[in-house]
Image 1 (cartoon, helix red, strand yellow):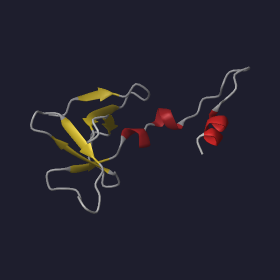
Image 2 (cartoon, helix red, strand yellow; image 1 turned 180 degrees about the vertical axis):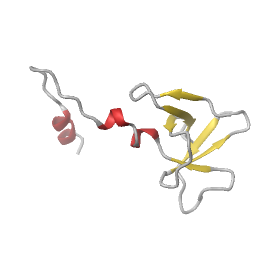
Image 3 (cartoon, one colour; image 1 turned 90 degrees about the vertical axis):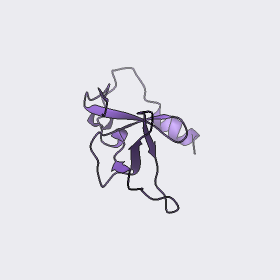
Length: 97
């Protein structure tokens, strides 16, 4: 059984998975053929996710889901900054090149 929790930003339900690297990844709960994450329920009931590749494609027991960060409406909307507050996004982009 999928245990869904609401997204903190948009309040839509998400399924939390554990990646091969041991990190947590939120995915949309319904399978999506446009997605890029293979999801399966492990033997302990934990939901596991991985990125399919040519060497290891999606297996029959896995379903393809879309990562929630790609569809979260609250993250795509940029809020206007209050007066007197500077955005550091441009500086961070230049520094990380």
